[in-house]
Amino acid sequence: MFAALTATAVATVLGAVLAAFTPRLVHRLSVEPGSPPRSACERCTRPFPHGRPGWVRPGARCPGCGARLGPRTGTVVALGAAICGLLTAGLTGTDGIDPALPAVLALAVVGLPLALIDLACLRLPDPLLALAAVAVLLGLGGATIVLGTSEPLLRALLAALASAAGYVLLALLPGSRLGFGDVKLAALLGLPLGWFGWPVLLLGLFLPHLINGVVGLALLATGRVGRGSTWAFGPALLAGALFALLLG
Ligand SMILES: [Zn+2]
Image (cartoon, rainbow, N blue to C red):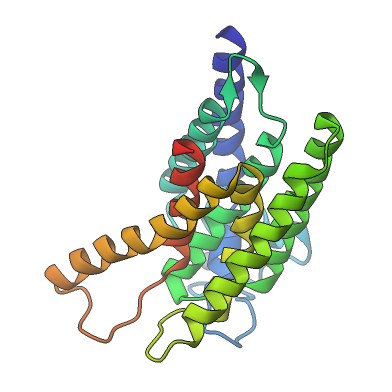
């Protein structure tokens, strides 16, 4: 019990701190598909520094003019803390911390900026998807060594393939609003969902459509979108996977 509380507290703080470093990244990558990332502040034209400091730094304010660049830091920090804390509480039982928790948390930390970018401009940038894939595979590889059996990892890889195949079919349906970024994200989310078993994968594949349906009805009812409009599906995919991991 004490170990679970400690782990949850540590993950909550870690999630908040890591999320605080993402608003700049979200802002720079929230551009039209095919456009290069933003290279300077739009208000004062001060260019972003080269390398890591230009992408990953705490807070959303431009150091030159103080303009807010990207989502509100407070909102992002609260989301990062809540998601990492909930996942850790959910994946820590009486027998200790689940070996796959680091993989799941790594995916959550990259998933949050992915969702915010998709909300801002309907895209899921490949570099972030690739970073998340590497982090999850390393995490699940480590968990495989800890467990001493490769069965969950094999199931995770099969689940990613199954999820990718299912979403390719959905994306190819006439009138589909899914993009290939959504297909890649669904394949990626298939890894941790499949790791925890086929029922969790099925729940994780079903819930995003439920969430997306509810969000769509709310958007239509409030006049925020019209019939035939497209809105981001990535946040629903990520939220569905989050709830499937917590419920499963
Ligand atoms: Zn500025």
